[in-house]
Image (cartoon, rainbow, N blue to C red; front, side, top):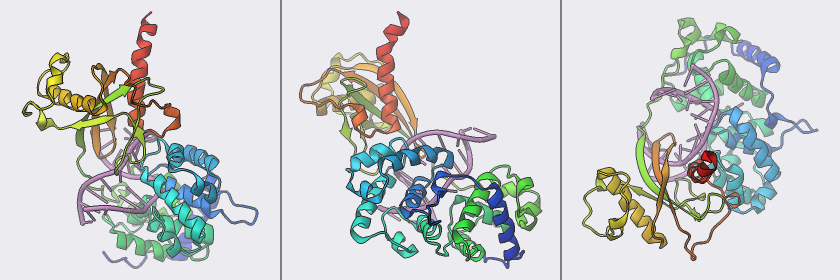
Length: 375
DNA sequence: AAACCGGGGAC
DNA sequence: GTCCCAGGTTT
């Protein structure tokens, strides 16, 4: 899949796309330039990390929130990680926030990098983000390769399954070295608003006359869809102790929602049902079995593990929460237990929580309000 | 190279 | 339901 000789004149394509961008480009908050005509690298960096796998329309709200909380790299570095995660709450891929915080610490010690290689060395900064900051804030001639650019190039050259190497070489070859920042933004804007994944709007495309996929008559067939891993079904039990506004919370660790807080949660497997040898089951004798059968017993076992770990007894079933996280589908049964003196209760507003935990708390809130609604 | 990591928009 | 999003890190 060698990059074919361009079926077009690069200068003509650049001129057409940059002209379109000047007239039709999006007006976005992170494109604001200072009085010197330059952009604040910190603000560019935050925006680029925020927009990793996050659509622009959604990113705007988080951008304002995050910049208000941490206007400078010094402010970000000085904050506790928990405050950074709180500002990121709900945005997903929380390693991004943890890496932003770590990188800010490195920058206050060693200074802000001024070139591609320096940025690439920071945690959470890969080839895309390093190229974006280098070109947009420092004018370095580095071509970005994101989902938009990949799709535009796939169509422009009619390459159905572009590899990373091919796409990067094609992007490098097309980059306008005289205005790399503007060129990078122009290609991404085209991909986001015209050269969109399904039903591309070729009628409004400034370079369709140069596009090999357009010439085939079926540009929407490029690029071929990615093969994705199967979604895993995960089942769990969670316990609400205290109130929905001030529950007992635990801090999660590991790669999944690491650093965030949430209700105590215990997973259970489909195949553990009915195979227990009796250990830990004694407490279950008096429990009403709301979900009879193999699944019910697995769930009850997980609930018993939770109760034992936290030293609470008795529980009331509140309901089940469904939550999808791209690669897995969670189904969590939520129970309420009486407060135990040894367990500290924390206002939800003081901790970063995932959407999953907010859903579980909303369940408890609805349960509390139900008598009022019925009355 | 493939899996993993959130959450939501558009269809 | 599907696919994808201004990707990066880990295995």
